[in-house]
Length: 130
Image (cartoon, rainbow, N blue to C red; front, side, top):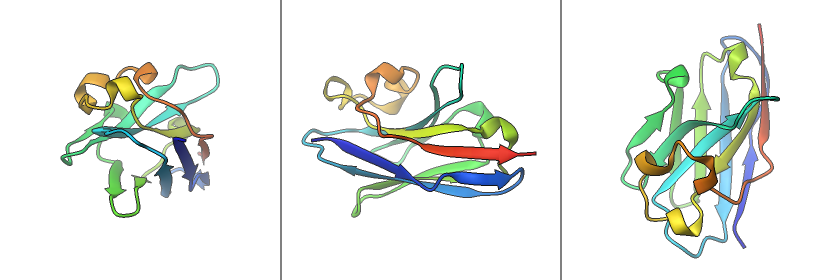
């Protein structure tokens, strides 16, 4: 059974840092892309950062230069290092891997469509105060 468990969220002041972790287990199919999404109340789920199997990274413009996505392949843990956090970064953060049908597609193809990812973990809340 596919399972994603996020951790590392919390409350910080603007300019602070957090590192999110995501433990993935139960995958029986190949996934070439993994990523992080976030969602604030009343807003759509937004793709934040993605990592291709070959190491290529993708970031949404608002976090470019502040967030870094990485993966410990041996432990199957996905990370999101978030520096210089801003109040607008406040959201529930979810890690995600593609559904079976999208497993062999690169991040560039699927990153803009949350429906190509799943199942979703419970998320981890990040709150940034000014």
